[in-house]
Length: 45
Image (cartoon, rainbow, N blue to C red):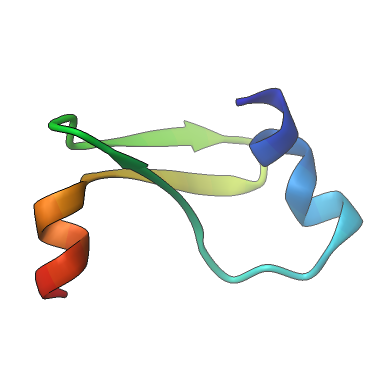
């Protein structure tokens, strides 16, 4: 998680995403948001 939080300062990224088995959430930090998606939602998107 700490690496994803530091990512926007190292690279220009538009979307930070974590693929999980069944969790669905949004994590807010100083650099924006990190999306947490279950695998099945990511596959059909």
